[in-house]
Each structure stands twice: as C-alpha cells, then as structure tokens.
Image (cartoon, rainbow, N blue to C red; front, top):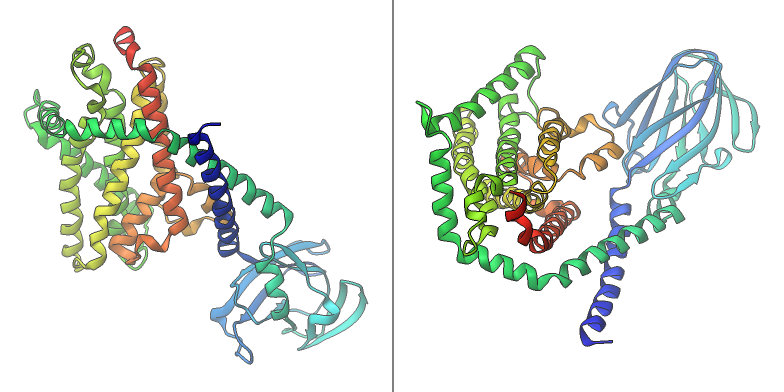
Length: 454
C-alpha cells in the first residue's frame, strides 16, 4: 500500500467521524418538536393549545396554536408544532359540552416520547373523568371552556436530545456519502489546480472574448445591447403585475412586494442566462474548438462573464429601487459580494458538466430549458418559504439556487449574515465543488472527441 492510499484512508476515517457528528448535531438542532394526541368527540370543535416557556408564565394568545377537530365520532390525530424550550402545555378541548376521548399523547422530536396521562395530566376547568385505562382517557366537558394542562418539562430532554436508530442510520449514511465525495474531490486536486491555473492565465483572453460576445449578441438589432436590459425589466414588470396587482400580494417581510421580489428574480436571471449560454458555448465557438492551440476550457467562463455585465447593471438597479423606497445601504449589503461569487460558482460548476455532455447528447439542451422553467417555480422567487412545512423546506433546499435567492434577501431585507446558516453553506459549496470536479474530469476525458461531434 503506497503512501497516498494510507493518507486517503486516514483522511477518510477522520472525515467520517467529523461528518457523523456534524449530521447528528444538525438533526438535533433542526428537528422540530411536535405535541400530538388522538382525540374522539361527538362534536366538531376548535382545539387550542397554549404553551409556556417558563414556570408560572401566564397563558397568552401569542403562545397558542389552533387545530380543528372535524371528524365527530372518529379518532383523529391532532398535531401542534411547538418551541423546544416549552415548560408546560394547556389544551383547550373545544367550546361545547361534549364527551371527549384522548389517547396516545406524544412528544416527537429526534425521538418519540409517550406522555403518561396519569402522571402528567392535570384536569382543570369544567372537566370530569369518566373512564381511564392506561394511556386512554375519557372525559366529559361540563361547560364551554374545558381545558387541561400537562407538565412535560421533564420529558423534553428525551424527546429533543436523544436519537432513535433511524436518525443514527440516516446520519451514518449521509456521513459516509459526504466522506466519499470529499475523498473524490481530494483525489482530483491535481486536475482541479491545473484547470484553474489555465483559467487564471487566460483571464485577459476571457475578458476580451466576453466583451466581444456581449457586443455582438445584439449587433444586428437597432437597439443593440439595450435589449439585454429591456427583456429582464419587462419580465420583472410582468411578474409584478401578476403577483401584486392581479393576485393582490401584499408586503412580504415588512417590505413592499416589488423589493422582496427583485432581489430574488435578478440573481435567477443571471444564473439562467449564464448556464444557458455556457452550455452551448462549444457549438457557438466551434471554430475555436477545432484550433489545437486554443485553450477551450476558457469558453464557458466567457459566457458567464458576458452575462455578468448585465447582472452588474441590475445590482445597481436593486440599490436604486431600495433607495427610492427609503431603504438605504448598510453594512450587511457587503455580503452581496459573497452571494455574487456563489452564483458565479454555481453557474460555472454546473455549466462545465452541461457544456461537455451536450455535445454528445443533443437533447440535454432542451432538458436544461425545461429544468430552468420548472426551477423558477421551485425556487422561492415569487413565494415565501414559510408557505411550506418544515419537511418540504428541507427538500426544496436541495436546490442550490434556494441558498442564493434567500441569501440575497438576507443581504437586503433580513440583515442576516451567511454564517448564520453553517450547514446549508457547507452543503452549497460541497455541491458546487463536486459538480466542478466531475465537470473537470469529464472535460479531460471527452475533450479529444469534441472536434469529431461538433
């Protein structure tokens, strides 16, 4: 066994240990706490849950959640997503006299904890026990304001901090996958450095070609490069009219809808334009691809820089719009540079793959167009992520543009630094680097055949 393999094995074991602990902590920190029970009543009613975060805290409407029992005579599961620091719970069992059955009371966090009704429950106002068997309780509501309380503070540590076997297996599989990806990246370090060195050496060529590409794109039209700005502006106005005028969308995150919207759609314009252009760059510049002396690995970057010229104008447009509405630049706007680099990195890494494979699989170009059309609606550009449940948000976050769009909003609206999202930041950059490495390796293997298929 050579020295390189020994280093990779040791590094792999270290990464496996670190990533397993990272995913375990992530599961614990990002899990939600759910209080649920099954209920059966003879009346349809509204069940309201109040929660307190400290001892002797008064119940308030601010700390309450409503759920509807709408299946009279049938057992129905009632679920409430509650904060992790709750001290006790009060459940209002409707607003009518009724016979109510309650069973299977649980706290669900990283593990499930059954709540013993006999030990934790305290019957309060206008309630009378009719029958109690193990964890099944039948009670009678005597008036219009029946409620009970549960002291569950002692159960929280078990529900939040312990992990069931499923969580551990999931963490182990994710850590193994992450470790293998990291080792693949490390093993390709030499090719990565060589590719990036060529990009750096050809930076002046890239800029000159990008400037020429930007000018010639609209050279045959009367308005010239103005069309590069008119189309995105008209698209923004159209979506603004549909969402705010047609669908009557109000302010979002306490800012006018148009401000909330433009900081999301403008980075999407840049990514979409850069990816589409870079994907077809080898066909467009086929005369350069067939030249042996030209470094064709520079060409995808040319299209990205060309698209960047328009994007820089729209970044100024964003600041102008915000100032016009009375929102002036602040310190948090500096991290716009970071999210701009993120967008460039994502477009560059993905386009390395698409530009290589589209030469051998022509249908990929149409697939990318469809994916971008669907991706627009699967990215929170015209809708807020708060519309989704926590489980759906986790799925939608697999889309790396989710990170960028929300990052632009963190920069201009929420004033949240990107380091407040450490796990998602790691995922985003791991996605970009992995796509980049696969793209570099694919380009290296298929480059000799480019001239044959163009």
